[in-house]
Image (tube, rainbow, N blue to C red; front, side, top):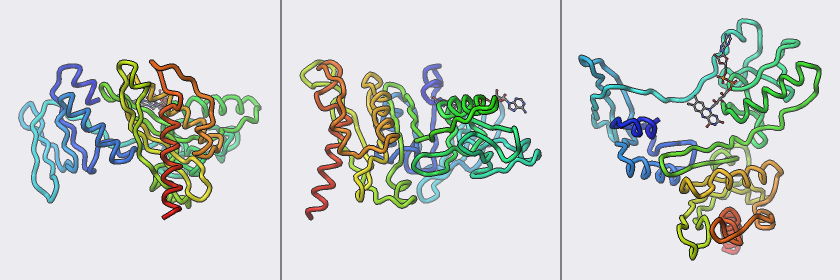
Length: 295
Ligand SMILES: Cc1cc2nc3c(=O)[nH]c(=O)nc-3n(C[C@H](O)[C@H](O)[C@H](O)COP(=O)(O)OP(=O)(O)OC[C@H]3O[C@@H](n4cnc5c(N)ncnc54)[C@H](O)[C@@H]3O)c2cc1C
């Protein structure tokens, strides 16, 4: 929305109570997103918690506190409140449907609720996650898969939802940020022994004009070497979304971080490198694991 409103010629201020914008990715990548917002003219105030919004004549005054409680005030024409997504499941609860995590509808892998012949899918349900077990992940990709399964099973089918990895991608002006799988703290919380390594690689061979860096975080399990999560930040033209899909496919099939380097990926200098950026990120992870173990 910061991008869309800026494109419409509005002067945009973005307030975020956490230390970085976009807390769905690691703070280092959030900082890169913030840099891009600032570069494009957005007034970004992190560590700033909105306390009150007052009407002042035709305008709105936003009162916030920053840092150690210093007051921050902006008087604006429009306020857009973007504080997350919650399932609206009262109708289901009133009908006797069992709810689960975050008040979402509990379903099995066949998208069945506890009531006979009643299926549910999409933003209103608890989503099976391949690494976490349960999650609440309201995404269009998940809704499409679950909806198809619910429909097929409502007609007598037996198909099961294979599970989400929370793969998501967002364009922020000229940059793209994306993630799949688990971040370090999420992996630790479900019993993995995670190691997260940051690295950088060019989107294609540097001698071919126009190459740009991709910033990458790879999270793997120290004990088994299994790939658990990847986060990427880079330019809009750097195939960031398709590169995260390599990682999503690898995690879906339980691959190790090491095995990423064995995959036969495409290469030509204007588009990539003999070792794709995702493969060099995997190699950086393996090198760190081995240097840590020799300490
Ligand atoms: C701004 C925005 C951007 C997004 N971008 C992405 C993205 O880039 N990638 C991605 O994967 N996901 C994205 N999403 C999420 C994605 O849109 C949702 O996860 C997806 O649409 C959920 O599908 P759904 O069928 O569960 O719900 P919905 O698409 O919300 O459909 C539910 C429908 O049910 C109707 N309805 C509600 N109550 C009743 C009732 N009582 N009776 C009859 N009808 C009712 C509603 O009117 C609505 O049409 C985005 C969401 C938003 C809001």
